[in-house]
Image 1 (cartoon, rainbow, N blue to C red):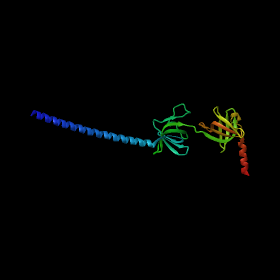
Image 2 (cartoon, one colour; image 1 turned 45 degrees about the horizontal axis):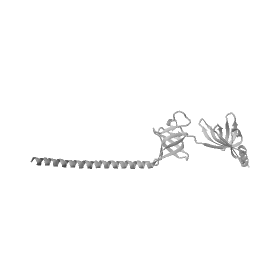
Image 3 (cartoon, rainbow, N blue to C red; image 1 turned 120 degrees about the horizontal axis):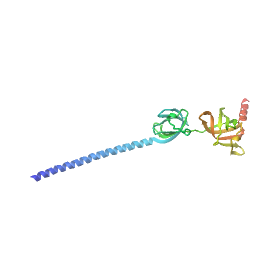
Image 4 (cartoon, one colour; image 1 turned 30 degrees about the horizontal axis):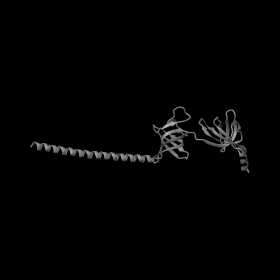
Length: 234
């Protein structure tokens, strides 16, 4: 009798154990499947985000700036919106002190590298640098200052500018017989036609720091203008 009771208890215990094992196994499979589905969903979402975002760099002039956004006009005259956050790094080659979003003013030319969102068409900036875009001006030499190494020129649209010729300025002279030859400041004469490449002086909007100068001794700018005026009067 006791054996029968013991066998019965053992059967009940084994049935319960197997039931528990199978239940836990099914529950475990359900959890694992849920984790897999969530992982697949997360990966798909991340892939979709990566397809919308690409690294991009732009150059433009600031039209407005706040603590979280910079609005610029790029070289194609398109308005661009640039977002900044705590990871954005700012720099200006002309300043030795720290440079940040609060130092950016309207009219500043910036080079921006960041993450471009194709959907929102906005850039999340990672690097913001103040850049100097080369300016090219054509005109005639009106005066030469030998002491300060500057040249006064009149551009083709009658604007007067001061050209600062420094040690790093490369000067060339062009003639029909000799072509381009390396020249110097002493070869620049009043009345010569001139082409200057450089950057605006931040302290004087009418002054250009020249990086390259080309003079044309055979093309007197003033005489050329006078002859044009004479022709127009006829």
